[in-house]
Image 1 (cartoon, rainbow, N blue to C red):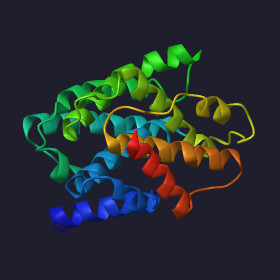
Image 2: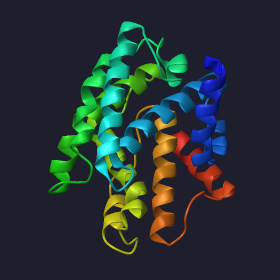
Image 3: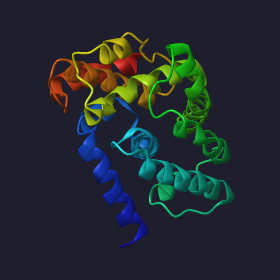
Length: 223
C-alpha cells in the first residue's frame, strides 16, 4: 500500500468514527479541511490511547510509541501515515512529544477539577500552540481553555468504563465552559464533543443527526 493510500485509509477510519465531520467541515476554508482531518485524527489517536479500553497497559505502550514518533517528526522522519499530512508542517513536534507523558498520568480525572486541569495543562498548552500555528490563528485558545475542552472530551470514553450516563460525571463535564477561542476546527470539534455528551446523558449514542450537527458547527464557527 502506498503512503497516500495508507493515509487515506487511516483518515477514513477516523471519519467513520466522526461522520458528523463531513457536515461540519463545510464551515472551514477548503484548503484547511485535509489538515483539519489529519490534526483531529492525531488528537484522537493520543486520547484513545490514553483513555480507551478497560486495560491501561496497551494504551500506555501506544503513547510511548507516539512520543517516539513525534520526536521523529521533529527530526524529519516519519512512520505513521498521518506523518505524510502533518510532519512537514512548521510545528514544534518536539513540544507535543514532551507533553505526551502527561496523558499517561491522566487516565481519569484525579482529585478536584483544578488538579485535573493542572495535570492536563502540558498537553493542552502544546495542542493550543500547535493548532494556532497550523491554522494560522493569531488569538489561539489558552492552555486553560484547551484543558477544559480535553476534560470534556474524556467523557466520551465513559461508556467503555461502564459509568452510568445518569450519574454526575457527564453533567459535571457539560458544566465546563465551551471552547470559544482558538482555531475554528478545534471550536467545531469541541462543540460536537459536547453534543455527543448530551446524547450519552440522554441515553442515545452517536452520531449527531445531520441538521443538529450543521447548526452546532455553524454556531461554533461563528465563535
